[in-house]
Image 1 (cartoon, rainbow, N blue to C red):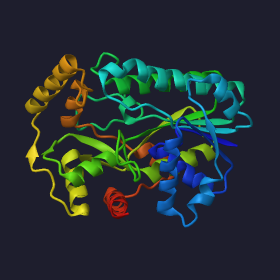
Image 2: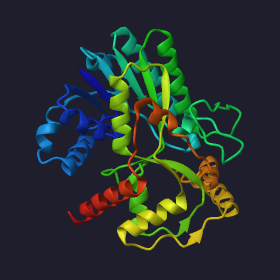
Image 3: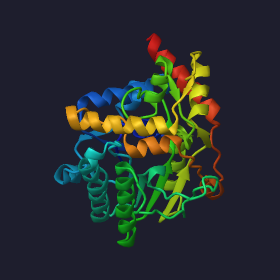
Length: 339
């Protein structure tokens, strides 16, 4: 039996589609009934019998911080894909981020150990990796994390979650970690996933930024996870990115694929510095949710390039071209608009 946490998220739903398509026996954890519809919708993109595949999943209602409920989910489980996470860059969400990302992962690791699970794959993020002083030097799996840097609250908690997984390996757990870049996939057009970027670009974004980051197709993430779990590899982390692109390049590619105008004005660093301070002030005065943190403003103009050679050499892995991924996701977005 395979257990998937975060099965109603972008990566989790695509992973569930692959697992059920492959005939695997799958159990998945969910928290709210309404999120199950998103998984069904993702299945409709790729299958003529989405309902049949969806019904193969054994769904367990549980929170990753509800240990008694999780214990039932672990019955008979041999492999775990831990995809559940809370994504936020709002500084005031730090305690909640710690609760879900670090404490929740610790619970999964502890239950995996006590239930003699054969292997765990944890979905982390490139946010949990260190940075180089030279922006042209590629970041790899050995780039040291610096706790003294001005790291985002999300990055801090994803790094903390990784430490829980590595702690588990010291106690006998067989585990691997993947660090995807910005994951491109369809079906999640709102919230914190990349689908929100596609929606915003389609609706018209005024500003572009010149920061550089790594992008990867959701099915590349899923395929890498599946291959790693079938291998004898353990105690290793792998960066999953197809290409390093500037945000402006990404915005232009999406706009072209959707036949809309790309952003025309550059959000200069000084403008972002003013914007995050005004955002902070509105939060303090009126209680509005933060939409631009200091760290997010910094990353928007930072050049961070990632090295994907480890996964390519270890598994002889080939990534989908980002242009192809963008076109596929854009087509599905337009398809949903017409539905």
